[in-house]
Image (cartoon, rainbow, N blue to C red; front, side, top):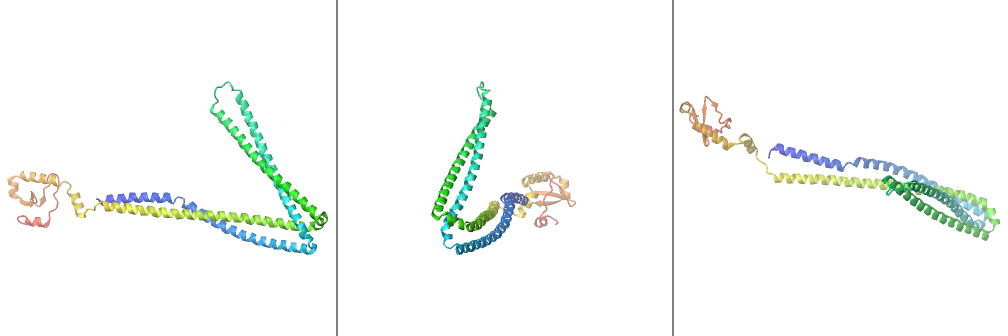
Length: 338
């Protein structure tokens, strides 16, 4: 097969492989960018997390020191009154949850009422066209959307109402717990230790805030690490896919080369120079038979395999519009007078 065909096929296959690799590696820049971004983010978060943990440890030591000072000041009374103040803190937290649930329930109820008004307005507008047998597409869509919105708002309102009910029950239980501890301890000890416990409570709020910050930073760091690891795994997958594509391409290329026999350069040159050997032989024999007696007398007859060709004045006579191929040295020396 001609080398030009092999070269064209190889170029086409190479272009196909390049297209496959380009498609496989299309997401590589974004993955590398995500890895760089998350790596920077993880380093920053871990530094902030370390600083926050150090602050929390210092605050915890301050709280412990303050508690020991108050215990030394008030004696065993501080231990007796401690459950009351802890119950009071739980009551304050329950009160904040109730207030948040009330706000969310009010907002959900307002949206539900508004959705019902809009649905009613659409139904009233459609009532004027009651003489129509069928509603058009826009009217059906408006009615369907309004109905679905009312249902969703009602579901959200019911969920918020249940959350409010749970928060209210927790608040009532916390209130009962506070009242129970007050009855057991007595108002006298509570009033005497109240300023000290307020200091403890303030310190405790600071501790809780720092602990919440630590939890948030930990979650952020975990998420960033997960994104980084997922990007790394995706890059590994792309790398394996590219190597597999190259391996498959090389295997197909070897199979194609093995299935196509290569021709020698001499046969390739002969096929290009003498494309119609049988036709030329017939033309040479026909022309040799028609040579005149005078031309044959003045010319030297050179024997050519299976034919005779006349050569005169060292010029080659073209036979049938074609120039015979160059004679080999053995044939040249076989002619008379050479």
